[in-house]
Image (cartoon, rainbow over all chains, first blue to last red; front, top):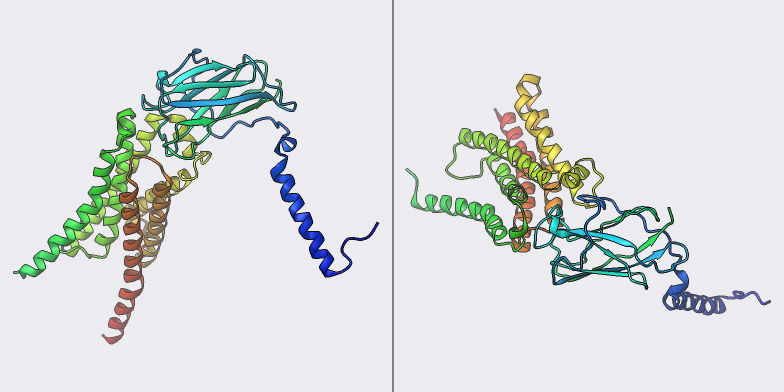
Length: 162
Length: 211
């Protein structure tokens, strides 16, 4: 096999192919890069958590909370998993009972909940989500909205078996 | 008796200062977030905004820049406003605690996910330290010029931390009025620091050499 960089010109040429190739790999095959690492609990995620928020169809209208719940490692979508959601909205703060609700995931692992518009609370517009049942390790999330005027937010879980 | 021109300048300075302090609060009073907030949270927010305004007044009183106030009056008001800042911080943190104890404790124990809370905590402890040291300076027998260095140093850290804290927060304050008061605060602090610590000291040193 020929050594690829025996002079400067061929080195530059090979290097540029290499860089282009790396770029293609990074942009082209994201699915292969996903390892479905277990989702880690976020700092402050469990603040103002009220365990066992009732299962609800909706908590209001105008804001869409959604995501996909998978098994960590395999990425297999998980059905019937309870996700608890709460946030400060136009109805009131994070401790307001009307801002707490639970939903179950569909067969494709997805969940969604329509609620009132989330408003900035303690300096950031954010939601709280929890998986806190027996089958998997407990996870508390605190995703921050890129903008307070956003009307949707997505948060995915990769759950590790307990 | 003062010239009418002087009185005009005095009125303009005080009106400008009052405008700078009050406008951010008026803008915040129109915030769409207020209706969904409980009383303690609203009070906490306004106490924080008031702090920005009081911090702006402090260096101006310290350097005796405000017209119509005699030196002793300015000094007395500097102390009163200082006490007002301590009370406002207490209302600010207390109101946050009543609104959400876990979020407030996270901030106080420096484990909050929000990057601005650490600057709020620095400003809080800095203010407490400056206030206690000012109250106890004579009892401690602290050298006046050393105390002044500490007072100015920690005071500047408090103000810079407060500005970082305020600018990063998304809350009831209007963006423009927040930036205006924060920039004024930094500008005034910097100008007064240069004047008190560099310019007036060299004048004093020159005077004492001559006498």
